[in-house]
Length: 291
Image (tube, rainbow, N blue to C red):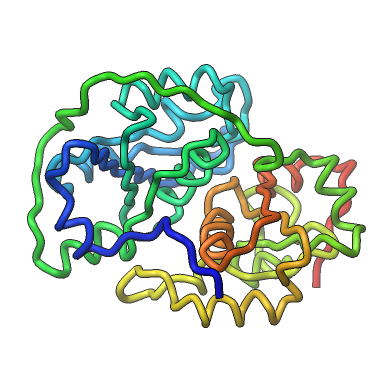
């Protein structure tokens, strides 16, 4: 098992918290019900209020939808232009010499989304806090309140890598290829189309398998499941190292939990369908599967 860096424990973070090169970020967003008739599946509310109520000392806050997503599309959280990301990460003090630590509240998916974005931009020195803020607080570690103090502005220079994000047409073609596994990170009831979907038509991308992101996290501690357990779950769905993996979910967020653990396990040929069901389910020209 070729375990890689990218995961940091609460104890490890506590040891390096005061290092000058650390750039620590709370990445939390909340998905709240949208007003009826608004035409959007949910409202993306930045977690700034919970950040100010309590965060790891020295942390800054990242607003995924507000600063780090494409504002020209109705879809939430879509990857924006590289120049927008360079400016935003630079404003938050990230440079080539930084060591970035990412966390969120309740679930790691907001942190893993930023981890995936940074990797796609050629920045590999980012880690996700195992167990989120929840584990940090449960251990009685120090908490700070109030607005973010932020870091000094820096120059962030992206070196974009191809293949980290794909669109719907490539996903449609990939779903028919024997060397590719398309994996849905939503819950099994949504994968099978047994419950109404806030994204549009219920169901899944035809031929896709299901490794729910929720099953890859301990519901009590919020930590990732052991890598050996994760690998068994992936292998049971036919996900092996010799195949390309295309991951999707509702909005390109929870699927990054699957991608993070696959990367930890040493899988290399990984990609994210950024539009996910938020795009697919509303496009009647695309096939959908239930049952």
